[in-house]
Image (cartoon, rainbow, N blue to C red; front, top):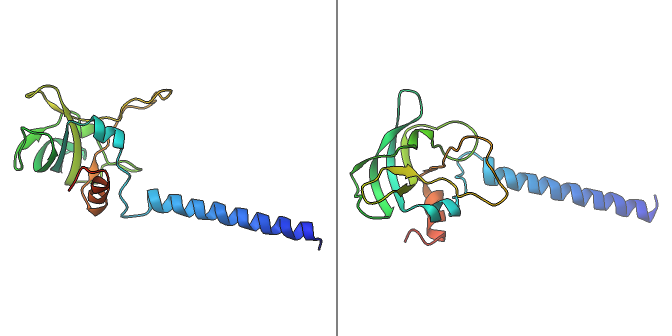
Length: 158
């Protein structure tokens, strides 16, 4: 076997190993069970309120429009223990494949018009050159250690 052929085989093996590693890294970062999705910085920046709330499920399997506040991370006028109405909460779900996972504690990035206006889950801001082709399902995030660590990394949680 010539030297050029051996080098080609080694380069091909290195290339296939690199592609395998990238595939594994994408799987671990996005699809591995128990992993939280990456928080949308643009959505968190657009939100006037960051609220940790208990979200219940309505009869249709979607989130109920009312939620009980467990903790307020950003914003005022709302306290722990309050019950709030979020207009588009039934349309929201955690990012990733699948449907709404069920009742639990979620981080809700919210916007509000004025002091007494209704709450809405903040959507992702529009990006130049991108027009969504499906109806928006604004993301909410499961409240767990990964979510807390990401918020600490962004300086939004002490």
